[in-house]
Image (cartoon, helix red, strand yellow):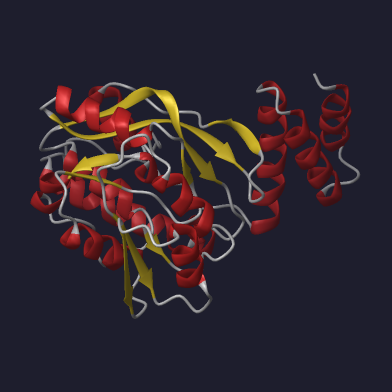
Length: 295
C-alpha cells in the first residue's frame, strides 16, 4: 500500500485488509513522505497487529514507493491496494486460490465497485474483462480492462519485468500490465472483490497535463518490445477536457449509472451536483427528475 497524504481514508483501507478471510499475509505500507498524520491513522487502524510493516521514506512518487514495497515483500504473491480504496473480505482468499490453480497466470484482478469520496456506492466499473486476450487487447487500445489496486501479482513476475517505471507517476500501472502480459497471462475473477474510490484530486486529475505524454511514452516502449513499430499505429490518446467540463460530465455519468444500478441516494447526490454546475441545462433537470423518481 503506497501512501501519500491519505489521512481521511487510509484507516478504512487498512481495516479492510486486516479483516480478510485469508489471514497469512504481511501488510506493507510505504509512507511516501506524507505531510499529514496518515501514519498515525495506519497505526491506529492496525491496533498493534503484528502483520503491519509501516515504512517511512522521503517523497519520491508512487512508482518508487511501489517498487520499495515489491523489494520488501516476502510472500509468493503481492496484492496491491491504494490507501483510499477498500478490499472486500474474501479478496485475498479468492485471488490467491486463483493463482495457485492457474500456474500460467502472473496477475489476477476482479470486478470492481466504484464508490465516491464519502464511500457511497456508485456502480460497477465498466470495461473489466475476464480472459487474457481480451484484457491485453483492451490495454493496447487504451482501455482499463484490469485495475491495479484490485490485482494480486506473482511477486517474482513483478521483479522479472523490472517493476514500475520510476519516470512515470501516472499510467505506470498500464505500462506494468503490458509488460506482464508479455511473460504470462492476465485474468480477472468474475466477482466484485474491491471498492475503488473516485476522488476529485486523484492522480489522473492532478497529472492531467501529463496524461497524453505519459501514455504515449508507455505505448512507444510497448511497440518497440512487441515489434509493432511501423506495423500498427499507436492508438490516439485524447487529452483530458477542461476541469469544469470533465467534472460536469463525470457527475452526470455517475448520476445516470448509479440510477441504473439502483443506488438512488448516489444518483440524487450527483444529479444535484450536475444541476449546480449547469442549472440551465435540460439534461441536468432531466437527470434530477429521474433520480427523484428513482427510475
